[in-house]
Amino acid sequence: MAPARMKLKVVAVMPAYNAEKTLVRTVQDIPAGSVDKIILVDDCSRDDTVAVATKLGLQVIRHEKNLGYGGNQKTCYQAALDDGADIVVMIHPDYQYDSRLVPYMTGLIKDDICDIVLGNRIRTRREALQGGMPFYKYIFNRALTVIENLLMGQNLGEWHSGLRAYSRKVLETIPWQRNSNDFVFDCEFLVQSAAFGFRMGDIPVPARYFEEASSINFQRSVRYGLESLKSVARYHLHRWKLWRCSLFEPQ
Image (tube, rainbow, N blue to C red):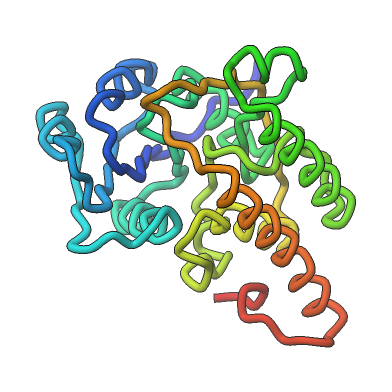
């Protein structure tokens, strides 16, 4: 008989910006009992995201000014840690990711198989493109993931997923407060995770691209890709003691 799991507190965090139209569906898809609390951080939305979240009974934190995607996550993770979370799941409230996967992701952490679990939208090229992923984003994602896996010693199916679960130890060890407030925050976090030796894994998640789902344009995608590669380069320069970088020094 398998040993019983310890009861760990799971907190879902949602970095929100103009998610009024998709928030209800995202929350309703989270399997009952799979999270103990949902914290939504609103980054100065111009719609009724806060009103919808309040009606759903979520804990809502509002930024007085827009801090960006990375800045939003910083507030999310600090709030979850302050609430005593053992596992934190980051779910985009724009319904781009399938929140039904939450118990599978947290289960891999609860069973001490992984420290970090990502949702992988690119199980096959056909599935990703049929899900609406723009072809240029598919190419960028594939190319960057191959390079990042090679240079960071990993074997992830996708480095650029926004569906993630972290153990408390990860969030207490990695100095994510020093990361960018922009979209490259996610990539910096994974480079840091590899640098600190955390066990990363992923599970398939459907790609969902539609009008209400958030997405960055071609120009910002190129900038994001270059910033991602810069994050990897900074790590190796730090590792070789050629250039000190605070992103890879413990909190």
